[in-house]
Length: 132
Image (cartoon, rainbow, N blue to C red; front, side):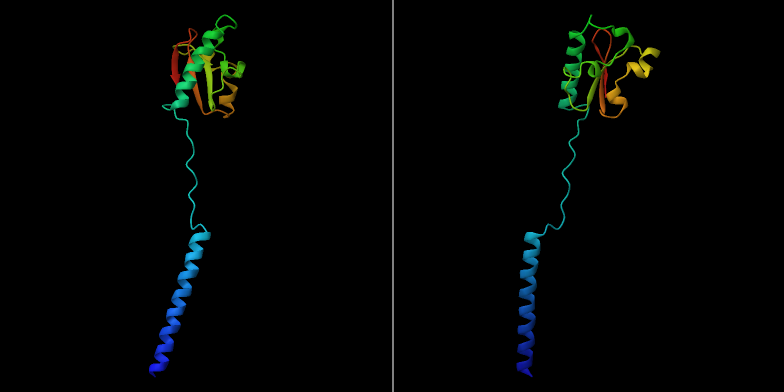
């Protein structure tokens, strides 16, 4: 009887060792759960917002006199090579806002088509109105 008990204990011990080894390899070579990397956000308070504001004002000042700002054109659509801030647009609007600013042709197509999520609005004198 004691011989059978020793065999049973040895069997349990060997099974436990085998299970530990298997568990070790599973943990080492098969990821149990991978969390996706957090999305990079370009919020209005971050670095991209500052770049967008500065570049939009500079773009407005650069092209003053080249085009009529009274219709509130979208500068980033017209001068896309000069405005390269990812996920942002640069738009001219009136302060206070007028009905001209609500006409789709005077708004940024990139923003309307949801190819950009944020915008900088400057007035016809290139002063910041709003960024969002």
